[in-house]
Image (tube, rainbow, N blue to C red; front, side, top):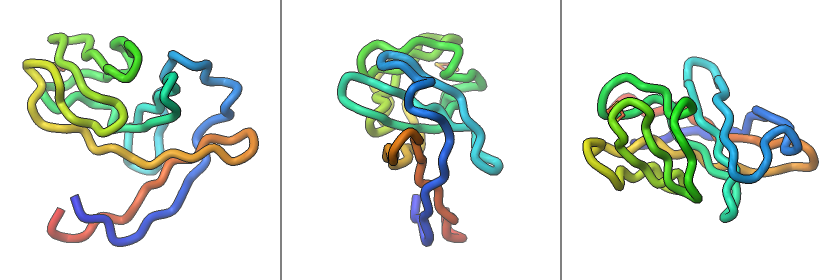
Length: 113
Ligand code: FES
């Protein structure tokens, strides 16, 4: 999905999201899932691509996101669908920690996305 402009937006305090947990955040119109894993911080869209379910209500196992509705799975590092019945990937967002804050990169999407 082409992005034409990106900026980082603070979404949480790092201390409020312990390793192994996740947090639903809203950035403008986007419902995003912030994941704090042993491999670092990651963010993807929070709504499953299979049907409508919030992944924040599912489980995070290492870097594997498991959907609460049908058990589809995604890699939270990339958004890639890794478990049936999920097939389409989630949009993934860059994450950085600056001081106490966790920030997510959101962008303006180009017209062809
Ligand atoms: S809604 Fe997520 S796997 Fe079906």
